[in-house]
Image (cartoon, rainbow, N blue to C red):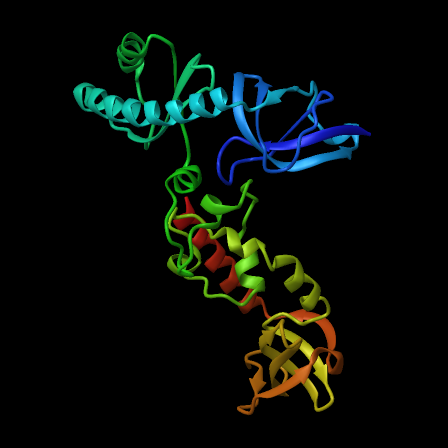
Length: 300
């Protein structure tokens, strides 16, 4: 086991583990640490704790010191310089007529590098822009292209729920989200209703996914043939939260030249009262596959 502390460099940013190096560090303190890109200023969000060696990325960097008043002042000055650098970079982008959108600017704590984050539809030739910026700021310049999720995280905003975006307020890492999660939660498969302001599937689809998976265990799918206390039936709708399904009884099985005949009456059964046969309507499966294909196209 190795003693570590968890540090963030941005609000809602990823948490990185560092070696406290015998320094008494507490949660909530600001510290100066050594990173792969130089000396950085961060906040301790996870107090000293022991974790398994295989859970860390070696080599583990060290905490240099608890932030002093001079360090705090330096960090504030860097934040002010970032605003000036943002305005300067916008002017240069206009001068070079580059098809790119500047999102954020970040100074490393020791001023060894200035990082400009931007989005663009394709590749951008920014070599001349880098030369101009290097001449102005007299330090190393890095232009980093980011995706739409990272753009939303940096800029922030209000989600469809009316609250501030999770990614901009507390969500440290983006987790994979799939259309299957929306389907298992019986949500509308309309991309405009299950997408965030970034245009990708909402991160919150992931939050309750595990619970829905547990609730859906043993619950028949829509279009599946089941045996109920009143005989064979076809599932037309299911409800994971209530662990029940709506069915229509089979009046006549499908035969050559004849379609399956179902009752007009709809009945509701608890999943424990139904026996699954493993038979599912091919038409329903094909419709679901078609929906998936359409949504994948829109996502792309």
